[in-house]
Length: 250
Image (cartoon, rainbow, N blue to C red; front, side, top):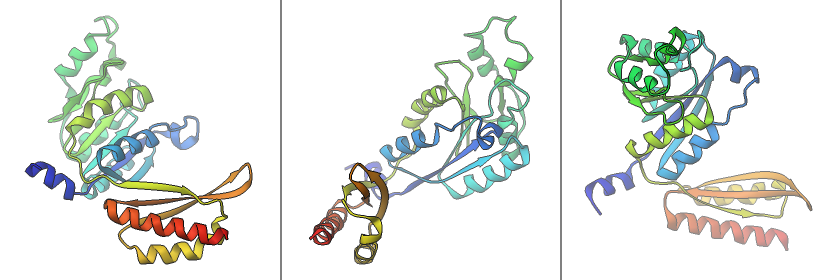
């Protein structure tokens, strides 16, 4: 194992998502990015620790962004980098970092791959405004780039474009020790196993145990999910859960 691999296996890397947009808060647009990003980060060994949704208000974006970037390894924003007047994410990021913002020649060149000079009107040129010092995130779909500054990664709100940007960003991220998980369908009601499950959780402090009730064709049921970064501890806790489930069914 290399030094980098050894460091990675012992490190916990954290992240937050900041979803920006009045349309999300109003319910007009249903967010499809949070779950996708969460799955993506979990798969590569980054713990998604917090999600916030804020309106298209500069002060709200700046306050949330400064709080999150100080607390977590990475912050991923979605939304607010389009061509309209309410797309203010880039300006808010610049304000949060205390840097200037202007048309970036690199971003203009990217937009020019899709739009003719006549089509690059004032609205579309807004998408080329990038905070000073930021690196661009390529956008293979519509060419309008995202960007990252410090530990903040600014991506589009349109799911297909966001996913394309995340594919660019992902390989550049520092990752940590992956969270492992196992699941058992209990065939029991959550209230019936709450006590025994609490006892198992207390006996296995290095694992996280969650119960998730649902309604099946046969009636109320519960999925039990056990999570840990240690494979042996995960196996031991899951064995205890399975034994408890079997006992409760007798």
